[in-house]
Every structure is written in structure tokens, then in C-alpha cells.
Image (cartoon, rainbow, N blue to C red; front, side, top):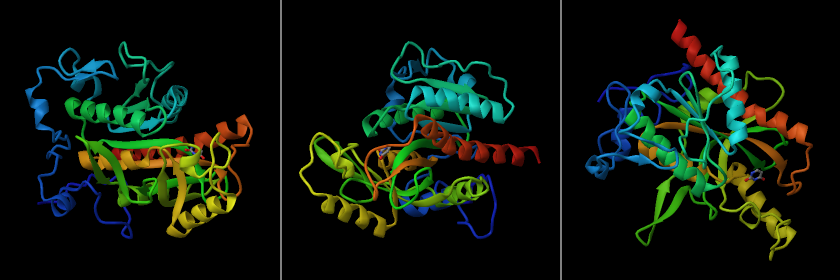
Amino acid sequence: MKCDCDYILSNEDWDPHYQNCSTIWNKNYGTPSPKNADGTFNLTNKHLEQLDVDILYHLGLDNKNYDLPKMFGDVKFVCMGGTKYRMKEFASYVAKALNIECKDPVNLTKHSHRYAMYKVGPIISVNHGIGIPSMSVLLQEVIKLLSYAKAKDPIIFRIGTCGGLDIPPGSVVISSYALNGTLEKTYDVPVLGEMRKIPSFFDNRLNQEILHVASEVKGFTTFIGGTMAADDFYRGQGRLDGPFCDYTEEDKLSFINKLVKMGVKNIEMEATAFAAMTREAGLRSADICVTFVNRLKGDQVTPTKAQLLEWQERPMLVVTKYISKYYERLSK
Ligand code: URA
């Protein structure tokens, strides 16, 4: 089996392959790689072949009545984030940075009001709501969309906000792995009455490239480290300011310090499922979040709206810079 990495950036010190390189896939999984020679990828669920039409319900699209290869076949990057507003803003932001004509991005989700999806050039910008259940519904339909569209070697980014652990608010964190609420590196989902535990690691090589790009941006520090994905904003993240709390401040700090010692840099609400599902599909992905609070110092998000808006642009800036590097490489 030959290496089929389509390198975006190069450096001899980085890992030699992406996680979805067919050579790595065969070693780790012992099953054929979902990736085809031309970079398109197959869905591993054989039941889908029996469907006359596959309705991507939450996107309001399907693979019979819409020409998905024509609409989305050129997609190289998908950028996901929590709110519709932020992802419309990202669509305009990336369009401006890459000189792609786009006056007012149009929501492409047909007769579905759950999510909003925009496309500028080869970039999809789509919101996923809050937490794993909302994010994973959207992500699975995006994965199917990319496969039906025959998109080649797509990369999926999640940009978001988070609580930081022992790092200054406004820092950016790139997740190397995701922990569930009981500190295992798995996405846990009950299937047919039994708990499945799916590994939740991100692509190290892709992260090395993103960190390199991020470290060229002045004004904030970018860290790589573990991310805890909680199923709750309050007790699930050890906060003292929710409506319910049956532990002490010492208990909270001892837990946060334990995470710090493990190398965990932030807490958000999606990383386990995001890492697990993209990896299982054979796609590269990265989770890039800005911290709004240092959880060793407090729980409430106190910076001004203007400050938070400025910070929220940081993951957008990093992803846009990375995408620009891809364009630079293409034009050489
Ligand atoms: N999002 C989270 O999940 N936690 C925080 O502390 C901030 C943003």
C-alpha cells in the first residue's frame, strides 16, 4: 500500500503521514481504507446502498433530487462552529481573505431551519448548535454529503469557544485528543442498548501544520493539548455557578488541577464525538477553540462583549491562514 497523503505543508520534523493515509489506516484498522485513489471516500455503511434516495433531513438535501457532485464536489474544507451567526460571519471572512466573490452568503439548507450552511468557493461553513447530540447529527449528514458529492480529501475544522485550564483567556487551543467526562479518550454512545466507546484522537500531522500557521499570528498564544468534552456546561465542567452544586471549591480545583497535570488545556462540549466520527469516516479534522475564562481562576465568562467578539475571531483567523497556505501551494 502506497502513501496517499496530500500534504498541505511540509517540514521534516513533523509526523510523516496524516492519520487517514492508507498506509496508517491499514496498520490501525486492518480493513480497506475508505479513501479512493482520487481522494474521494466511501461510506462504510452498506445499508445505504439499499436506499433509492438518502434524505439528509437536517440539511434539507438528498442525493436524488439534488446534483450533490455539482453543488459540493469541489469542497476541500468544511468549517463548523456553534452559531448560525458566527458561521455566516466566517463565510464572509474567508471569502474576503481569499478574494472569493461573495456579497451576502446564502443559507444552502433547503426548507430546514435547524442549521445554516454556507459555501464560498471550496469551503463550507456550517453551524452545529451546542453539545455532542446537536453537533453529531450535523456532522454525520455533512460526512454523507461530502461522500455523495465526491469531494476529494476534505478537511473538517471545528472552531469554537471553551474554558481554558491554566492558560490566559483569549488563548487558542488545538486539541490533540478528547476526553469524555470520566477522563477516557473515547466518545461514548449507547448503541442497541449497549455502550460503545470509540477512540477520540485528532490527526497529529494536521495539528503540527496548524500550530505552525497559528504561531505566525501575533497577539495571542496557541497551545496543543488534550480537550475534555463535557455533556453539560455547569456541573459537567465542575462549575460552582450552576443551579445545582453538591461539591466544594476544593473538589473543583482538585479536579481541574488533575486535568492540568494530564496535559488537558481546555473544556468544551463536542471534541470526543467530533474526533471519533471524522476518524471513523477516514477524514482529517481539527478542533480549534479560543478560551473565554481560566477555570483555575473562575467560572463566569466576564470579559466584555467586544472582547469576546475579538477573541472569537482567533480560531477563524488560524483556519483562514491555513486555507490560504493551501492556495499558495496550489498556485506554485
Ligand atoms: N464553552 C464551554 O463549554 N465552556 C466554557 O467554559 C466556555 C465555553
